[in-house]
Image 1 (tube, rainbow, N blue to C red):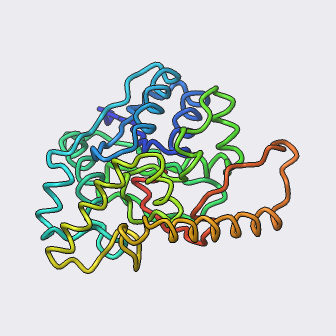
Image 2: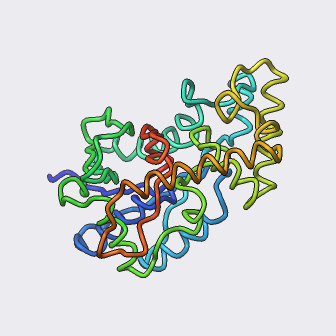
Length: 278
């Protein structure tokens, strides 16, 4: 008797995973793929809007894997200490755990599950979900098919989807208060979604009251970051970085308007949570 098979593809609300979904739909139509999104409840509204548009292209619903416990629950379980690059309990409990809980009975029943992950051909293998079950196989179609960042952009534009709207001011999906944000992204969050910034600030104050050593933005509280003079300084420094990078980057003749700058590349930070930001 042949083993049952299942194909799954996780969407973060970001550029690369959306392009992978389009790529698989266009090039491997014979595969029945279950697309899923693990909702932390703290996502940008632009993420939800983009997922609806993606569902329209795919012609099927994206499964929402809502964790049984929300961010506030896990915050209390972690003594009201904020998550940080040193302690990524948010990714573990709000992204990876719901995925494992969803697949556990499927794998236990003997089904072979292939999970497709959006690591591009121009990237080193980034930190993400590593299979610990013999029936769970992780595949990297962009690596296999030689698709890089420019290829990802071409896929999204060719499908009529374009980029999620938040790429106009931020280069990551995931929680509004993600600790991997650069300071310019915090400033832009304040400008685009002030209510989300205030929520992040309240979480930070609560954590400080409970003795947490972490702030959302390394070495600086959001209260300090939001001061007018500091905002001006952050913006000026960011514009200098952009100017330096543009002066050293060759223009792509196929995209004369320029490609969107990845803020992590601009600031020399490439290590992020794969489950949240792809």
